[in-house]
Amino acid sequence: MAIIEEPRSSQEPTTDVAGRTDVSATVARVRAVYDSGRTRPIQWRVDQLQGLVRMLKQEEKRFADALASDVGKPMIEGFATDIAVTAGEIAYVAKHTARWAKPRKVSLPLSARPGKGYIVPEPLGVALVIAPWNYPIQLLLAPVAAAISAGNTVIAKPSELAPATSAALAELIPRYSDPEAIAVVEGDASVSTALLAERYDHIFFTGSTRVGRVVMEAAAKHLTPITLELGGKSPVLVDDSANIEVTGRRLAWGKWLNAGQTCVAPDYVLVSESRRDELVDSIRGAWAEFSGGDTRNTADYARIVTERHARRLQGLLADHGGTVAIGGAAEPEARYIEPTVIVDPNLSSPLMTEEIFGPILPVITVESMDEAVKFVNQRDKPLALYVFADDDAAADRLIDETSSGGSCINHVVLHLTPPELPFGGVGPSGTGRYHGRSGFDTFSNLRSVLRKKSTPDPKILYPPYTRLKERLIRRFL
Ligand code: NAD
Image 1 (cartoon, protein in one colour):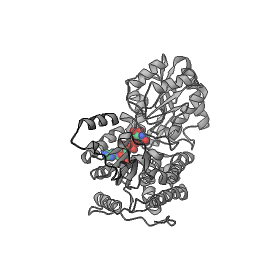
Image 2 (image 1 turned 45 degrees about the vertical axis):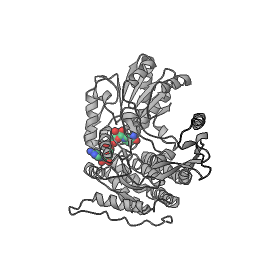
Image 3 (image 1 turned 90 degrees about the horizontal axis):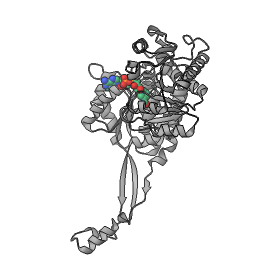
Image 4 (image 1 turned 90 degrees about the vertical axis):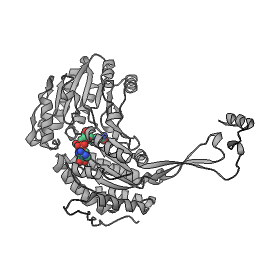
């Protein structure tokens, strides 16, 4: 298929008598397209990916407005973290798809020779992608692009909590790519439930641990392979050797971005008493600079997604038993939560037991980094773990002695931007990886093929098992 230059009209979803999208019919239609073989040629895959990149460029304003209306995202944040970064990832995937799709030769042991061994990446079939609201473009399109690059058809469900972005994606994706192979199904949890009742060849879910469990259960019914990109509490370990001014500014940025509603936002900080107050001062200074002195009214600070979510955060502010060192204001009806630092909250308070997912940063005083490591290792393995240290050996030790899906040393969040760093969690923070080639591999069946010629055909394998054969087999194996 040639590159689609002109926007197409979107394909009408099939509806049932009650007027709801008939999910089964949509999945059947998308499966028929997969079965037809249309999505296998590399050129088809690249055309779709280039169409999505073109969509992000040509429709930038529409998407930026939608992000602003959904989460009050500052224009530049929406552009950088949802639109540009996604276009960059998809362009990278489009550029490398042909190479990734080639058979990968492997060397053979003596016992398998003569012959050739190779891994053939083949598409899985129909993929379901379910996305959250916090980076609603990136977290829908990046997995969709990975699925397409591997030659699959896709059902994509954006989040109902970002309704303007969901509507834009549902309207525009079919105009810029093959609408029969990539179907966008909008809706809430009930639509997700209906979608999950169908059979897929891969399910890729990004969202909360709670819903992750629901998805895993649904997948188990059909033994469908899954990728779960979940959340949790991502800790920050600040070594005594850290540059505290820079550490404070980078942490302040990580919590400011999207008002802390980022899966890899720093959740809490562990620091020694000797550096703690200096760190809090640095964060305070950075937030004052970011806001120009008026956080409530600056256009550069996002809102909380809904009043309900803001009330949850207000609840965390009310019940922690620590000292509010910065901020603390909440106006849930305006979906506003002030960037806040709480020093030494009660470790059994919800602030320290739940994922915060908002602009509140607990700072916990520890005796030493050994205590910090112990603290982290006693809890669920996190999605991200951050280390701040100017002493390289100290940084290496903190990485070695802990575990997480990903890590950044001396910064936050940025480790998810290079396409060749696979992104994902570990244990309760997620299963599986994507971005760049790891995304292609996630949506592929990496099929192992051993190729032999009909001759020679040594009889050593075949009975009768003589002493001579046994000796030879022992030598070869
Ligand atoms: P969520 O789990 O509430 O919703 C995610 C998606 O699941 C939405 O599309 C929603 O419609 C659907 N859904 C909701 N209830 C469902 C149900 N009962 N059955 C089936 N589907 C259902 O998550 P959210 O509030 O949109 O996002 C916030 C969470 O996502 C946080 O925990 C955050 O850490 C996590 N997250 C993780 C990543 C990552 O890459 N690891 C990225 C962003 C967000």
